[in-house]
Length: 224
Image (cartoon, rainbow, N blue to C red; front, side):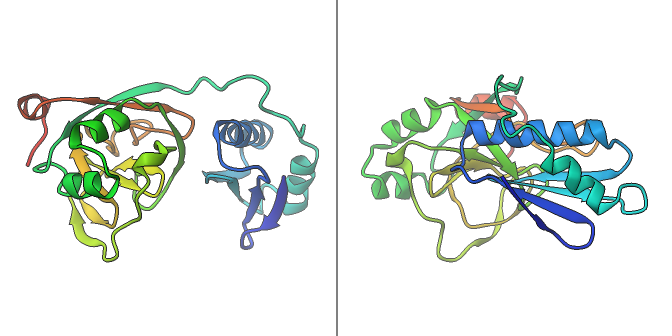
């Protein structure tokens, strides 16, 4: 584990291991321990695939004190699994709800049915949030579903769109620009500022996708 400065009010910790559940668990434990030790001085913690950026209030928590705490941490904080939640997301997979579905199946040399089966048969780890509020990066997809982003991002992707990029999958929580490949749509609200936490998925959660039909999608509040 290495640390570097992230501006005048931040410290970034970087994990040397490849991204994976153990790395995420380690970073979450470090985050929780730092907040426990400095509840008044730490303003925010931002998790990435291999990084944890800690933002602090200098008038409450000096940088050197925070660094001393970081350097004094147990190097192995992942001995027990974290109690992340198991989240199941219903998805209507179709060309109508995911306009790249057929193109992805051709690129991956799979039938649409096999593509849906592969995507919905895996449990994905929530590794990081970013790009947009509530947008959570989930991995890893099966190797056969690996596909690059679009060369030109779309100006607007509908909220709830389920997408692929490289060996990641995600659900767009709000209507926004985006360059991932769309294969379906989820009727659930992924982000609501009135909820606590506002995002349905948090780093450390485990996510599965359940195929549903068009009428189920609409009955559950989905819109086209």
